[in-house]
Every structure is written in C-alpha cells, then in structure tokens.
Length: 453
Image 1 (cartoon, helix red, strand yellow):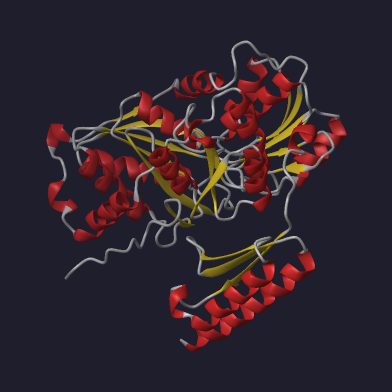
Image 2 (image 1 turned 180 degrees about the vertical axis):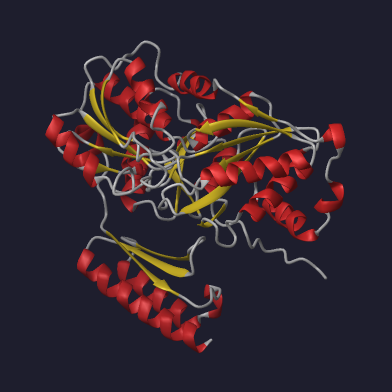
C-alpha cells in the first residue's frame, strides 16, 4: 500500500494536540524518538528539552526511551526555551533536537518540534519521511540490542550556556542600567533564564509568571494575554513590559503607557535601526501574509521591501535563508534575527529592541510611531473539510470583487488553519466597519459553498 505524500501528524509547527489523546500519546512519542534516531543516526545524539507542562515529564521519558532503543544517546536539558534547545543542538553538534512544548496553547495540550543539527527546523519533506518511518512498522526490527542500546545524559549547564549565548545579541558597549522592566514569563520555559539575562545586563526586573506548577503555563498571562503585563507596567511605572509565551519563542511588548507593541511594530523598529547601521541584509524584511499593511508601507518609505510567506515562523526562516535576509517574523511575536539564532527567540528580540531604545534615547512608544497601523478584522469558522480555494468559484468571485472595492488600499487573506479544522479570513483596509461587513459576506459565502461541495 502506498503512503500518502501529505503529512498527517505534522502541522504548521510540529505535532500538537491534547496530551494523552491521539496523536499526543506516549506511544507516538516513543515512535517519534525511534524515527528521529533511525533517520538522523543510530549512533548519534539527540537533544531533548521541554517547557513546564505537567505532561512534559511523560513525553520526555517516552521520547528518550525511543531514541535509546535505536542505539542513539539522549542529551536531556530540562525546561529551556525552544530557541535554547535549538542552540544547544547546534553548539553540541548533536544530530537532532526535540522540543516538547505546545507553545502558547493551554497546559492540557502538548507538542513536539524538531530541529536538525544546524539548529534549523526540519523542512516538510523530512517531517514526511519521519511520519513514514513511524507508520511503516520497520522500526521494531531495527532496535539496538545489548551494549548498543543508547544512554540518557543530563546536560546540567544547558541553561548557563544559553544565557551566555543570548547576551551576545545585546551590544557590548551598552548596558541596561536604569531600565525598569516588567517581565511576564507565562510560567513557562523562560521563567529562570529570562530574568537572569536582563538582570545581568543591569536592568531592574519585576518578574511575573515565574512560578510554574505544571498547570498554569499561559494561564491568563504571557504573550497570549498581554493585558496583565500592560497593567503592571503602569502600576510599577516601568519603562517597558516584556511578555513571553510558554516556550519563549514569541514575545509581545508593552510601552510605558501600557499599550501593546506587537511583532509588526518590532520589525518596523528594528528594520529601521539595522538599515541605518548597515546591518540589514538583502534590503528587505520577511513576514507572513498576516502582517499589517502598515509594516509594508513603513518599509517602502525607507526603500525596503517586505517579503511575505505563509503563516508559520519556519516558513519565514526558510525564505530568509533562501533570500539572504537576516530579519523576519510574525505579527504574533515570532521574531527571527538570523545573526543571533536559527529560530524565533523572544529573549533575543527583546534585547534587540532594548538596544535600539538605549542607542536612540527614545521610549518604545516614540519608536513605535514609525509605523501607522491599518485596521485588521479576522474571523474564523469551523469547517468539515479543507477544500482548495480554487475549487470554490463563488468564493473566489466574491473575494475578487471585494479586492476591487479596496482598490489597493487593503487586502483579503484566506487560509485554512494548520492546527485546527478552521477557515480563517482576514481583511485589512482603511475603514474597520466596512471590513467587518466584507468579512461576514466572505464567511457566509464560504460556509454555503463548502456545504454544497
């Protein structure tokens, strides 16, 4: 029987779902560990790290068992931000890295993200090969025996190695002396490393979300719920607020007035500073189809381009590597500085923003004014099937008509979620009320046509 060329387990960013339900089971984890070891080297080494979810203990053990069963060794780093695990994988010359995390999802979910030995996320075709290995039944006959069985080794200084690494993202001639930061770590993977990094650079850090108990990760806190950090910034009269998500590959900011500063604004701020200093490669920034039109207009005013990709920081990184660009990211706060890491890193992004503030002497609110944001309206609807848009002529006709009405001053973006059975529709333009009407029209047409297919 042939195997489908479409990935079934891996979504936009790894495998993800409710813990102890298919596909996020210990059995899947063990099979994944076996497949990773078989694909990347039976005599190799695989780094395994996690965030602070209760189910992380279960999956860590299962993946380690699978890797060792194939004869490879496991390097356990414990709770560490996703970019930290990517860095340890690369710096220790390991053959692969596995992150056990569901990122910004609630604690009851978990997931697996994979890195190659160079610290970059795996391309789609390699993920498909791993799926095929897991489903083939071939792994059972290839397990190691006797002295060939692998070992599990704990890397006790992984946290310190990562802290030292990320501090290089902050210019050596600068300090954070006199800066007061409210920092929300979402009770997640950055709860120890992030406050340490900024304190060592001289900042006064007021920590939030640094008491993980296995079930409170992302619970009304962190980058997904920035209202808390914004409120505390005003309360403590801080200079800036920094909120990470559960695995700290995303970051959202608050200015001193308690206003949210998202990934698009950070890209605009950092692109301008890097361009002025001759550090921006390729004359462009890479972002996704969801990034605000205001970012594009801001870059164009500086003679820079915006290269757009599908949603997912891995696609942003792929485009950056192919085009020779060194700055990219997502509106949601995945920000990639390829000169300082191989994947989205919330701590690195925060350090780069603070460096611009220190060098310019401007507040974050002043810096964010560089970009004028266009209104965006986003709506999602549950769908039974993800029918390709080219097979929905009525929907295509309506979208074309609406784009004609927007006359180049707005956009229509439709996509199916990579992790849920949902259609997402985003409209952007100068008038929010009009956008809401258009979104409802598109959703109504889509639902009716999908039901008839």
